[in-house]
Image (tube, rainbow, N blue to C red; front, side, top):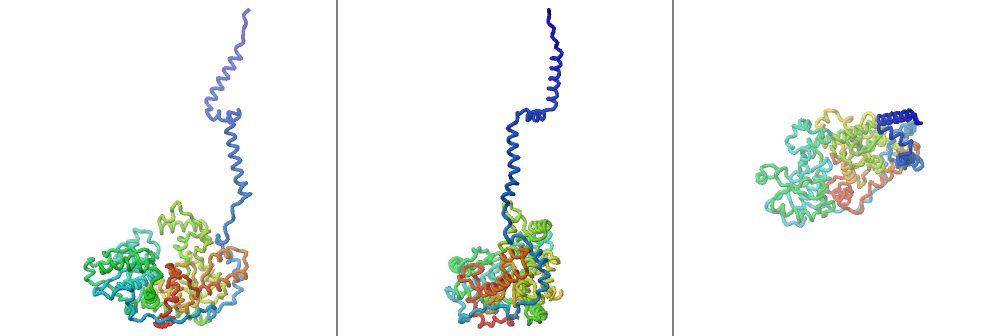
Length: 576
């Protein structure tokens, strides 16, 4: 009997399998990936995925258990918040604890004054007697007003050392513009170089003559017994260089070069060529030089360099107008050198209270003003570190709170030496609230009086310099050449006392960040800071080195003391 098998179930099963296989093929790799997971084929993948999940969860957990350290005290700008909190107390506390007549308590003990070198001491450099043919020194004084000033004084000293005739120093413009004779066309030049948008650079192009800033005749006559100074090279020498000083080969000298270097290396060249040109010349002479050469440096800075008549006459008017607003303080006033300008804020890489808008604005200014300098991948921005280290420009509100905390009342007359303040209307308002008698050169002089100086940064800086020099109190907020020279000049004028408030910014930022600080506690700290400034104003470094702090520009004593009596220069009234 033949067996019969029912093949339909198998056929159906095969058809179903075929159907599933076709479906699987249609669904593709994703289907097998998913089904593989459920069928245990990808346990390794699941294990890895599980571990990654643990790590991702453990990160926040570890951060919670071990949070990053808080930012160091003083690294965050909260000065304006503190001001808003204590402003009612500041308004109520208007009793002045500081009298401008008696603010400075320390006095320098004046040692026996040595006589100055006499007029016959001109040739004491160890070089032979004056040659039959004159030798000439040409220097390019680079930088801003006071960096140029140091170059001029060093040039006088070097001319004395080398027994050379000094040609009136030229102000170096070649870093910005290769042909300074084209100055009338600087506006067309700006169309091609947006980097020169900053006023300081525009001004550097235009301030290109010694006589525009200094009294040239006074400079020559004051030095005639020590160093011969001429306006131009003689024609016989100029002819050799096609009547262009630019054709004289430039000698490059290392910074802070010693007098021995100049005698051994430069003097033989001068003897051979009759004229040498050194460019750039800023900081090219050591601070420590022979006494009779150091004297020439003193003579140049504190007697020979006098600002031009138009600068001096306007400075005298502004000082008189400041005195007229200071009747309650016997004509005395406070001057503040504020560096909260747009380019200074950008260059410092510090952050304030402007948020993302401020950051974007500062990034744009840095890119326009300094190109790729701030765009390097390896450059690290640390505004908090800068602030803690005292490198951030003080804001107007910080200056105001500091001075009110020190005991200056709201009727204290203040002269503000500054270029255009960053976001001036907003940032100056708190300072004006604290000190209504706040003045600037623009508020004290008419537009017609300022017109000859407008557009020339060095001339405007010279005007600020003179008004600050004659103030009873000078406040420096950011360092640099301006306060460096001014403090030295004030030490020379005021019997060795700089009469300068030098805030400890590293301590100040910690106090200003603490919004829970009471006004009375803040005042106690400021009182100590004022006393410390009083003490530092008469300090002189023990060791004189070839550095800024060891120079006669910052500390003129004892090297320049003999000038007090011999030239009657140590009385402020004799400056005009």
